[in-house]
Structures are given as structure tokens and as C-alpha cells.
Amino acid sequence: MSRIRHEAPVSKEVIMLQGISIKNLSFSYDNDRLILKDINMEVYAGEFVCLLGQSGCGKSTFLRLLMGLETPTAGEILLNDQPIKGPSLDRGVVFQDYSLFPWMTAGDNIMLALQQRFPQRKKKELKQLAVDKLKDVGLDSSVYIKLPKELSGGMNQRCAIAQAFSMDPSILLMDEPFGALDAITRARLQDLVLELWSKQTSKKTVFFVTHDVDEAILLANRIVVLGQSPSTVIYEDHISEEKRPTRENQFKDPEVLRRRNELILQINNDVVSRIS
Image (cartoon, rainbow, N blue to C red; front, side, top):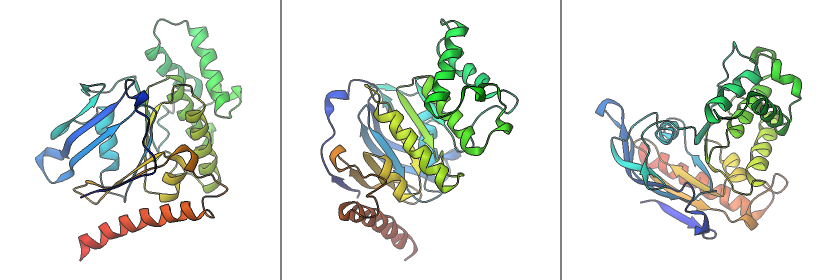
């Protein structure tokens, strides 16, 4: 049975916009061994949810189900009370491998997405939007005409984030987007995503996959821990805005350290239960 720790209730005022209900969700490939088993979750619009767990526990599979790239073996995922039946431009995605077409410039990659999302808008207007979003993620407008191979890994990932936010999706799905980056670049992009998310009047609902406890604590206002496959939710932690850690206090504040230790304990207990 999962344990749920509530720091403070999440406001239900936002539930009407892109609320997600996950009911008795199970998944296996080709009716083989279960990957996910009996997952139930209610996610309110504007929540920043980190899916935390060890490699191979089904986090990315869970995200693929939210993308609409896979179909549940049992149960359902409802978006505003309607089942997810495939990919949608209302759900933006940022992958670990940058997901930019290498033969297209950074700007053309963003424009490709924008033209699909806003087919009625003029090309000049969309190009300005793309440039503005590149600036929002700290890149010069000259990056617009550069190929991905001319950019560093961190710059490529900034372009991918700019592409996702430029489409203005209600839901943002991020699959270990900073896993391949060095520590400094990773920290900068964590801060960037948190800033982009928090400054919006109507916050996007974010699902962020990670196996890094410290990353989850820094970013999320809700942490969902998945156990080993077949994965179930073994622990949840809701973090109120006033208790949200900062980069300055995340390794010093006793409350943050207690939360970190509890998350590590829950993961470790799950490991021990499987090998004993």
C-alpha cells in the first residue's frame, strides 16, 4: 500500500482546466510481464509532478501513456473526463535526447511545431514568437539559423524547451530532460524550467520524470514515487509553496533534509523488499 504525505492540500480551484484522472492503470507490452500495475492518481491543473524511481521502474512508460503513444492494458487515463486516445498538440514533450531534427536549423525546428499548432497564424508572427522563446530560454536570436550540431548539448536542450513552451500546451511532459548534461548546465536548466512554469498566470501541468531525488525535491510541488516493476505508487509527497526548497537551502534546511531522507528510505525499502 502506498504512503501519502500531504504537506498542504492542493487547491481545487484549478481542476477544471486540463485535470488528469488515472484510474486502475496497468500496462504490459504484448500482454507479457506487467510494467505498471493498478495506478490511481488525480492530478490538478498547474501541478508540477515529479515521477521518481529507479531506472527500469516504468517512469518513461508512464509518460508514453500520457503522451498517447501507448494504450493501457487495463484502466484508463482521462483528460478533462475524456480518455487519451493518441498524441495531441495540447501535450508538449521534452525528451532527454533533445528531439531536434539535425538537418533543420533550431529556428526551423521550432517553426515546424508552431505551424502545426497555430496553422491560421502568419509565418512572420510565428517566427517572431520562435525568436522570443529562444530569448526566454537565454539564447541569442542568432541561434535561430544554427543547426543542432553547431550547438552544445545544453543549448540544444534550451531549444527543445523553447519549442515546447512556444506551443503553449496545457500539459508538459518531460522525460529526464537533463540526464545527459553536466551539473552546472543541468542546474541552470532546472532553474529555467521552474522560472518559466512559475511565472505563468495559468500554470502548465508538468510531469517530469527523474531518478534524482534532489532534482525532484527542487522542482516539484508533488512527488510520486514508483516502485520496481510491476510498478505501483509506493509513496507521495505534496509540497506547499511556502515550504518549497531553494537551491540555497536544499542541503541545509532540516525540513528539506528530512524530506530527502524519507524519499530515499522509501526507495530503499522497496529495493530491500524485492531482494530479500
